[in-house]
Image (tube, rainbow, N blue to C red; front, side, top):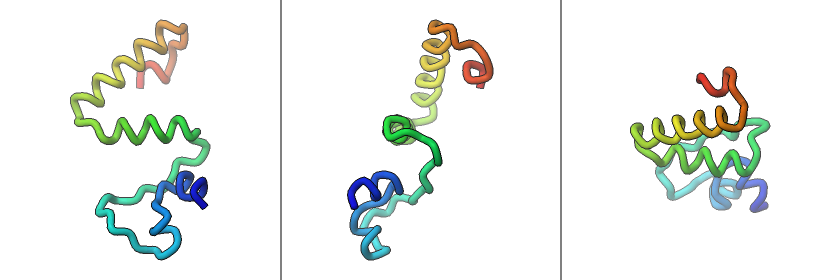
Length: 75
């Protein structure tokens, strides 16, 4: 059951009862997003707007340094 909760992005309580004490908004999982990608996205969404911009800039820089220029680097 725990892997199902992780995939759906919900708590065990929510999966079993449909109710959860947490007040955060539930988001549907992104199809095809790896577990590691989900973890990174979770951290990213906890950052403020400025910090998110810094992370995006660093990610673009890493992608360009690895030779991965293109749409992913400009987005």
